[in-house]
Figure (spheres, each protein chain N blue to C red):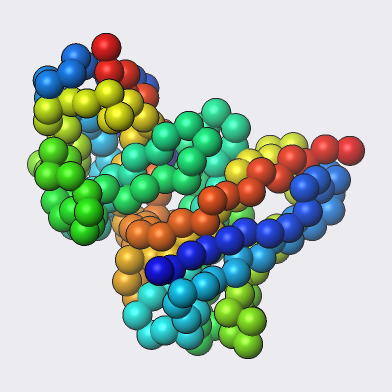
Amino acid sequence: HLQLQESGPGLVKPSETLSLTCTVSGGSLTSVDYFWGWVRQPPGKGLEWLGSMFYSGSTYYNPSLKSRVTISIDASKNEFSLNLTSVTAADTAVYYCARHRGATVTPEFDHWGQGTLVPVSS
Amino acid sequence: QSALTQPASVSGSPGQSITISCTGTSSDIGGYNYVSWYQQHPGKAPKLIIYDVTDRPSGVSDRFSGSKSGNTASLTISGLQAEDEADYYCSSYRSSSTRGVFGGGTKLTVL
């Protein structure tokens, strides 16, 4: 049974870097069958795709964030990570890691983590 | 890049059917069959209920169905139940560096 779990700091200060890790259990990040991604949801608002990666290192980012976002993989730990630099209050959101339904970067996510709220505040 | 357009809210009585629309452009919904729908209950992660416009993941009730006409996709829920009360989001592949885009969400109220 595939499970994803986000972890990271509970609070980030403005202008700093938000770093989150997604630990995958019950499945392998190095599978050739899936992309893995990050989605966020500001309080009371809709969903926004941040970016996705393939185990080979191929990455795709939302252009609205591209200069600030990086996704990387640690295959030895079966984890992938999100780094978002120069955060502001507008980056306050619940951050989800998720698995794409297949080996394409279409926004069809069939497994999700429970999400973690990251407030940005001084 | 603007989100796909969904009505803010819809409502229906138990047993009825409702339809939620999701309008995009020829660069996303109209151009590809990669439309999906998610159900999200308060405080929970989204759940995929429709993918590739019309397909349901294993375990999803057949009361949920999807369709597409031109640049507009639709989610229909038949035999409405109290447990269907939730937020619903559409998404689509987009032919630009954006790759993927979500709708703004629709709150379904079961009266």
